[in-house]
Image (tube, rainbow, N blue to C red):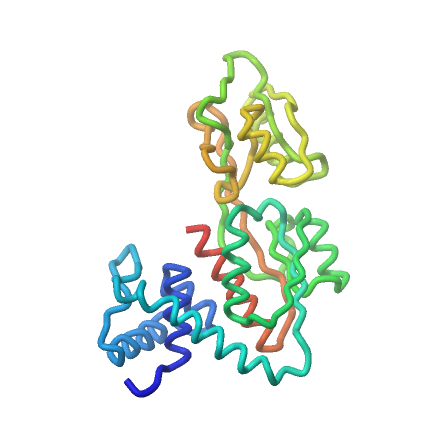
Length: 283
């Protein structure tokens, strides 16, 4: 093979990272069939099978695993070469709801950086309502939030996030006692939804911990202090949905929305990668 198609190599890296042809296509602003064709041509030119494909799973072959590091270096070098002609570094100010930020944030940022290493990402973590207000005021380029107002017509639905009553395996709740609840301070949409669900089911509850963010609520859950209504994806390691075991009402899934009016290709590309990474981590 005389030369590698850089877009095909980038597609391979994205499929490897996102474990999905669909998510890679979203990140590249392409289609699943086009991404599949690029990688097939890359495999044909290399004379190696890089990916193992099944209806439910995409994973690296032994040859793909061996090629991945070099492929990353090639994509990074290509992006660096293109960036050397940039008049100024692009800053992207993004707000993400703290209900959506988990341990996978590092992976999300890594994928964005790999797509555009010279992009400066300014990240703000706040409640969905605060971020929407900041976005409407022009303080954010983009906001990824839980849908808080169905009357609002703008925004793109990235995915639905399932909530659960998260707690540790050894959490103890004696029958007849109020459920010990960990939640954020009011006003908080998730807090309100959890309380409405418990009150509607006639389940007594008491505040055992009030946190200033999902990380602090996760710590209270891990310590066994209480149960918290959290997006399952961001729940602390080792926690499970105790709802069925404790007979708690089912929590409604919430739509994760991307709000942005950016039109330049560079920013849109970064946001496509961001959205695809969120979807991939949601499984």
